[in-house]
Image (cartoon, rainbow, N blue to C red; front, top):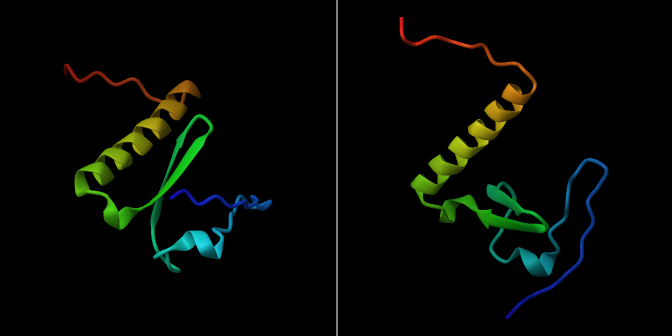
Length: 81
């Protein structure tokens, strides 16, 4: 069964998950947010395997590094010495 509901994003980027959509979510639960074009997925992190958590953290750090690289904030290093 698919549940559909509407919510809005606040000026601070916050969203409210409607009561009937929260299920077993409670205050303080950690969620992972995955965005793929126009699709956004929320998933409780406790249901992710440790490997997936490590992969997501690696992807986050890689994305941050790539943004720094595009801004010219990387130093070139020679590891052959």
